[in-house]
Length: 334
Image (cartoon, rainbow, N blue to C red; front, side, top):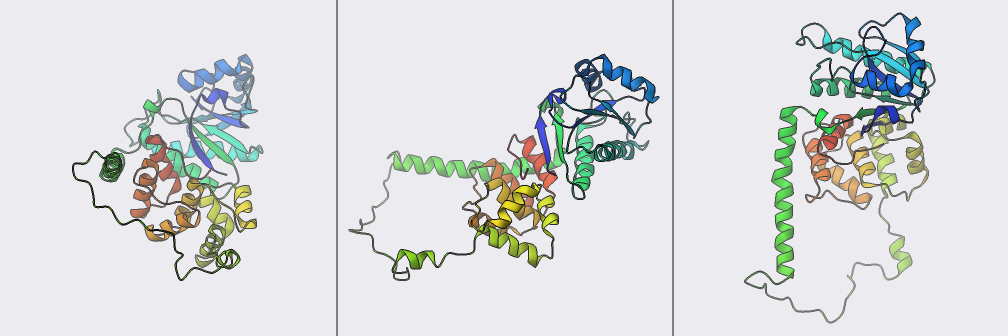
């Protein structure tokens, strides 16, 4: 059920179905349409001929020909005419129609291009926003793995203001963190002009008086685990398991592992994804990360970007992943 944003050639995707950004004739064209027809071979065109074309905003399905995918779903997006002719609604409809066809044909994996964003001229940031919103809504109700395939990073952009705000947020924290690291390394290497006074060395380590006497007793005082905290937070917020793992962009099988193993240690992106799904304020998000053995680091752009969204109370994981992808970072969940 996760949504993945990837850089790839859609004709090489080993999925149940790929979506072709087609024109109304369904008889091939340029861009993604032409590339898919060339890779699939003449059989694809022969299957398209009897379909009688397709209206804008709708989709039709054929076999995959020579492609690794079993099916090709031909979705007709709108030509951009300034935004005042129902283009956004038609594009959303093309995505919804494609998803409905994939679901009706038993597809578990599906790959989309960024429909209408090529020769049809739809602004790429708006096309991406519509794709992510429609696919995200669908995945909250259905189990499917969906890939949004971006062929060229130059063809990808999040909204200018959001990009600038995140870039400024990174700059304020990332640069400062690396400046502090440089100063620390300089101090260690003896490059600072004035050496800091040395603290007296302790002759031996002495345990804190509050520490338990034995290892068994110490282990008996283990704090709440990540898994326990996660399940408690889900219950406190009145969420179902499915609501939580879908909002986290997490696979159901992975969630089952976490639920069944009290000592499960998630990856950092997984822990962050659950903090986002639970809509935790920043301090509680930090606490959840600590339970998994991690912390937000201002030496990591990935961490700063996720922190930015949590601090601004934007818990849409698909929008967060848009930003992470734009800054060439790994994604949450998945």
